[in-house]
Image (cartoon, rainbow, N blue to C red):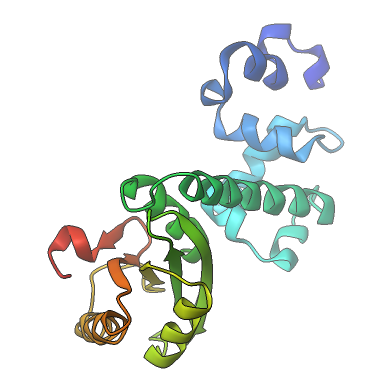
Amino acid sequence: MTIRDWPMNEQPRVKLVKQGCSMLSDAELLALLLGQGVKGQSSVSLARRIIKEFGGLREICDASHKSFCEQPGLGIASYGKIQATLELGRRYLFETISRGDAFENPTITRRYLSAKLRHHGHEVFGVLFLDNAHRVIAFEELFHGTINGASVHPRVVLQRALAHNAAAVIFAHNHPSGIAEPSQADKQITDTLCQVLSVVDIRVLDHFVIGEAEAVSFAERGLL
């Protein structure tokens, strides 16, 4: 039986329109992206199998092109749809904080930075450059390191902040270990960057450490 043979109100597209996305299961949402099933399996059945094989939606979204396309019923088209959907989500969050005050909307800022950095298998240090009203000018991943750390060069951060004519910045970096607790090295480099940027009146508003399940804010911890 194909999805077209299901009762109308149980078909994922109809449920989405009538009840909203939140009422769909993980398998139903994934099935809408996959578009079609394979012989003997509807798109929802295929989605359920894939979720079970990978272990969850997070693992599917983070899968490499090779490991994704090795699964029966999947290919580059499905991989492209999922990656495009993730990127649309990141761009939506970026536009949201760009149109408002990033510092006054820490929840959205935290979500955006987590979406940008959490998936990296190595440490990445990025900077949100903000104007006088704390609206986002740009986000840049400035330093890429190893699984254990990334070298951050204050001179480069200063140069990029001046290039953007930024009045304030928010730092963020991920911990590939998944543990978001700030290290002593994190605190030291933050202090150094604060001192360097204060010379040219650029404020450091926060520094987020991105882990697997949370993002720790220096400002909320009283570390700035």
